[in-house]
Image 1 (cartoon, helix red, strand yellow):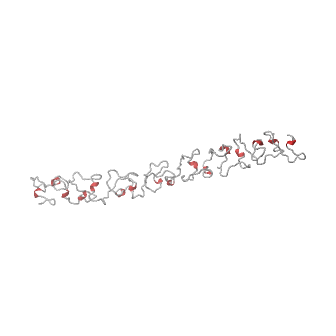
Image 2: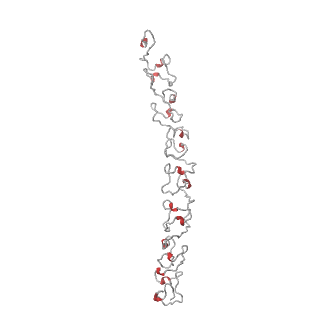
Length: 349
């Protein structure tokens, strides 16, 4: 360019104002860095021409052109160079290159983290600090996230019960993990008392140790097996008669408190009833039988309660019932109490 393009004084070269008009694109380094101001020590490393980012009217601010840059981001974005964005203090801990996750050269937003190569057991380095951690209702554990969660999808997680033998209810409370069903037996014992499998709740063996009362709390036919259809009618607790917690067999019925006249409620249906040779009567068993361990009659029968005629019993070969002796008048065909012969209190006239 002609001298007077820049030098306006004919007495001094001082105060010269350089005119960039007409300077060829890409020729900045012809002067800058040699006869004119060049890059400062903190300038990002580049071999590109100054005018790729800087304007000729003002060097600051410069507009960085990332065209063609696909790797080596950390060369500049490292905190060494002024006005160049670096990782914030809350950035996840990683030695991976910026471009591993950040795909945009105009914005850091929309980053997709790549878990490839993340060391096993190191999830908590970020999760719970600079990245999403356990929610409030997460099961209580100190195990590393990747013990149960996959890096490609958090849900569903596959929980590993390895080494867990107690404290099941810490998680299995119906909130953090599946808990007792509505029909579960009522108990405050730990799950592991009965449930021995960590993969299924099936096949649990109830431990009755220490249980001596309240059987019907569970044995109600819904939660656990209850009375069969033919069970004796009673409101007494199971444990009144059943003494074994592993078998219902061998129960000894306790007649204490049984209401008078109610024997037939059981005897004759769910318990032993009258034999085929029993005298005909509609009276309650306890009118004559007062022994609840044996059916032996301890009271004299009340003839007013018997049905039929005298001969229905006396002469019908009922065990223990008096019949005509061999010397009895054999020609009479009338009933015992007819013709004013025998009374119900004595056979002697």
